[in-house]
Amino acid sequence: MQYKLKHRLSAALMAGAMCCTMIPAASADEIATPETVDTAVPEVTDSVTPALSQITENLYNDLPDAPTGSYIGSMGLPVATGETKISISSWVSDLYDGVDAHMDADALSEDETTIIVGKGSDFDYAVVPLLVQTEYPADGATSEIILPDGVELLSYASTDYDLIPADEVEQTKILHQTYAEQSAAATGLYVKTSSDFTAQFIYTAPDGEQLQKSLHVQLSDEAAPTQLYADNGIATLAAGPTPPYATGKITSIAKEGGTWLIWFNGQEAYCCSHGLNGQPKGCPTYSFSHVSRLEPGQYTPGNHYANQVNIWGGLGQLSLDMLDDRPVVASLEDDPEVCEEQPDILGSLYDKTQQWIMENYPDSYAAQTYIAAAEELVNGTDAQSGENGYYTYIYNPPAGYAWQVVALVGEEIAGGTEIPDVPSVPEPKYYSAAWTAPAQSASGSFDLTFTVNTDKYQLNTLEKVD
Image 1 (cartoon, rainbow, N blue to C red):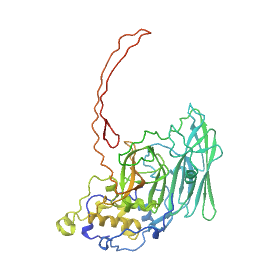
Image 2 (cartoon, rainbow, N blue to C red):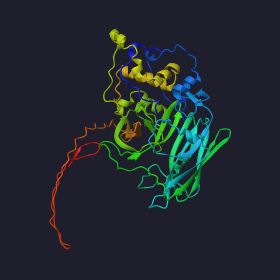
Image 3 (cartoon, one colour):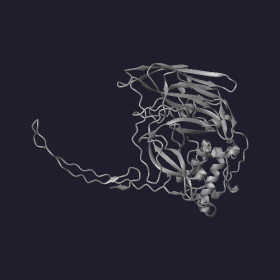
Image 4 (cartoon, helix red, strand yellow):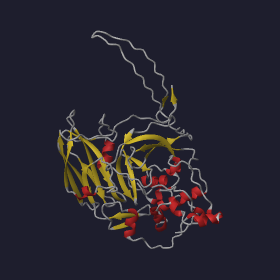
C-alpha cells in the first residue's frame, strides 16, 4: 500500500474504530460514503482476497473460537461465521484480567449453571445479575430471555437506593434480540426476585432450529448481596444539558464487521480510547465526567456502526476533547529531507489493523473514512467549525481500571451553542481548628456561635460560587 507522500502525516490521530462495541446495520446505500480525494486513496497492488487466517488474526482474534468462514457485509468488511454457541450465566463485576478479551469462554461451554445470590439482611428479595452471550449467530436469527412469573426485570437506571422496574420498551430491548451481520454479542441485565427461579436463553436460527440453555438461581441469607450502581449525584457544565445518568456500566456489546460496538446503560455508546477494553463482563461502575461536543458530520442518528467509525476513525477526538492540540501536519512532498528522515511515518498515523483494512478492503466504509479523515487533516479542516452539532456526555472508569472512556450522544445543539472550556482544578485548601467545651452537668447546656468563610467551586465548571 502506497500513499502520496504529503498524506503521510505525523501524530497518532486515528483512534480505535476497531477497539470497541444491537441494532441491525444499515445498508450501504443508506450511509453517505465519506468524500475522498483521489490522491489519498491507497493503491492496492494485490487484489487477492485475504485468507481466513488473516481475517481472523486482524479482526476476530478476540473471540473464544476461531471462525470457520466469512462473508462481506454491507459495510464492505468480512463478517466472521462459525459454530453458533450461546450461554446464560452470572454477570460478574470483577476487574477484567485480560484473559478473555470480550466474551466469557467458560460460560459458552457450560450447558446448565447454578448460582447462589444473597438477599441481604434488610431485604426479603435479591437482585440477580445475568449475562447472556451469543457467538457466531446466523444473520437474521433471534434470541429471547425467558423469566418466570414473579421475577422482575430492572431498569439500567436503577441504583442501590432505588430499584426501578424496566418499562415495556426497555424490556423488549433487553429480553429480545435480532442479529444482523454480527459475529458475537453479549448483554448484562439485573432482575429482582424473592424466591429461587430458573431463567432460560433461547436462540432461534432463520431455519427454525433452536439452541437453549438454563441458569438456576438460588437465594441465600449468607451470600453477599449484589451491588448496583452507586449514584453519586449529577453535575453538569453551565451551558450543557443534564446527562442521562450519573453512573453506569457497559451493558451490551456486539461485533459487527470486525468492530466492537458498545451500549452504556442500555443506550448506544461509543468507545473513546484506542486499544482499551470494553465489555459487560467485569465492567466497573463509570462516573459522569463532562459534556463535550460532536460535529454533525461525525454522527448519523440510527447507524451505530458508521458513527463508531466516523467518531473514532477521524478527527472525532479533537471535538470530544480527547486530544490536547491539533497534530502538526508536515508537507512531506515539499520537504525531501523529511521524507528521508521519516520514510515509515504511515505507521504513526494508523495502527496495523487499520492499515490492513485499507490495504485489503479499500472500498469498505471504514477504509474510506480513514482516508477522508487523513485528507481533512492535510487540508487543515477544523474539527470544531460546524455551526451545529450534538451534546456528548463523557463517562470515565474508576482510577486504576484499564477501561476506555465512553461517550453517549445527546440532543442536537441549536444555533452553534458553544460549550465552555473546563478550567484547571483549583488546589484545595484545608483548615482545621480545635475547641473544648466546659464540663457540663446532666441538666446543663451551652451555646456556641461560629462563622465559616468558604470558597466553593462548581464540580465540573469549576466556577466560583458565593
